[in-house]
Length: 179
Image 1 (cartoon, rainbow, N blue to C red):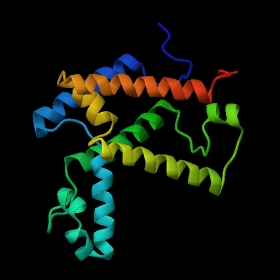
Image 2 (image 1 turned 180 degrees about the vertical axis):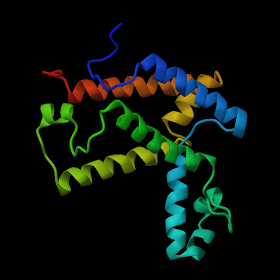
Image 3 (image 1 turned 90 degrees about the vertical axis):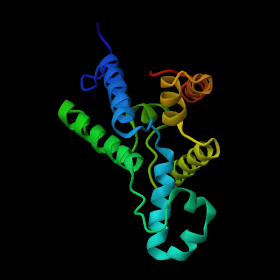
């Protein structure tokens, strides 16, 4: 059964099964479910603490996630680092690793536009995404994967909304298809 046209990609069923095993191991060994967005809050607080530790200690939002005298590196922060390293290892071992400023599909649809404008657009989009995740109290991995693992109705609703939103935006952006 052919899973994808990309010869370097993993079988999605195997990747899903491995994700499930990692999720079970996470709960078994740490008692924690998946989540990533709080790691960015911790990272921002740790970086700001290098410059102005008093400000971070007085900030109620940062103090919610960073205890005074504690580094801020926890299982979730290491989970995010593990995602980066795992993706790198998977790409290198599959032979699909490459440095690329603009993905092929985006280039076919919108052309090759690099530079400050693209960087700012990407940065602002990421900032909006992270703001929404923090406003909702979690990201797709926290609400979607971990919520569904716990059979939480809110997790299932969030996951359906993530897919519906993704399909809608993909349809709007790539309405001509992959020609």
